[in-house]
Image (cartoon, rainbow, N blue to C red; front, top):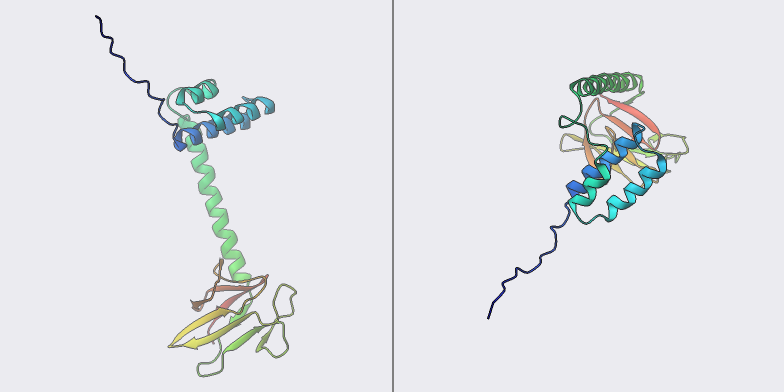
Length: 187
């Protein structure tokens, strides 16, 4: 009697998210470079999203792979240069806008909190339509300036970050109430 020994058939390993993301990136780049027509790109994207094995993805991206392990050195240098130039222009734009902002003087210590909003009873009345009636409050607590949003509709930001609750602010910080922006300044 002959005994046959067979190994159980295991399913192929699950495709990792990183492999799928890499393939989708190659397809996007291929379409952007004009290597794929729009219809071909859409069809391959659909197939990549339902692929179960690495081999399935390899078939979809085989004609898009670059030789030599990635981008050419010239392409890397060009993208690096463009990135550095873009970073400089963003920095210049921020600096230009920061200097052009109107100043908001911090209230005198010992005084009542400064209420900010559209309501005529506020200490600082802003009439812009994106400012709520009772928008925010600026007060001095334990030697620190604290800005608190009072449930405004369009929000309060400090240095570009939306404020939820309250935050400590300093001279030179950029604060916005709705679409009205100011640079905090001491007397």
